[in-house]
Image: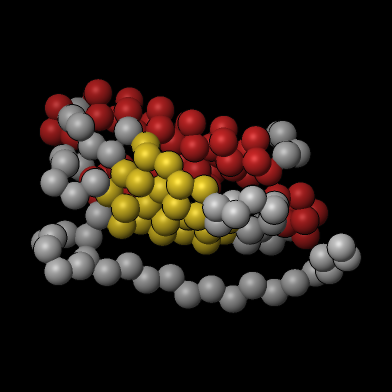
Length: 130
């Protein structure tokens, strides 16, 4: 297997759709490509899609909070292993959604699914937060 080139360009386009059933969009999406070459080489890029659990309170809050937490925590963790970094970021996102739901009765029961390509050679990551 050959080593990946040190420099590359990633072009992205992101969109979500409300669908045919709901009146509000509970999706959140992010793509992060660090501007710093060393950081990009260490962790790569991160794509995250979260879909709030329709029919539950605060799905749009849960998905936004999960995406924001994952993006922030994935790149902030000092661990050089991308798999452990994404696992830690997902745990922190789950805790953040859970705490927000506990703190506000109007958000009780909120949750979201989270999907994205896996870090490094991993095929993908799917989890539920909240």
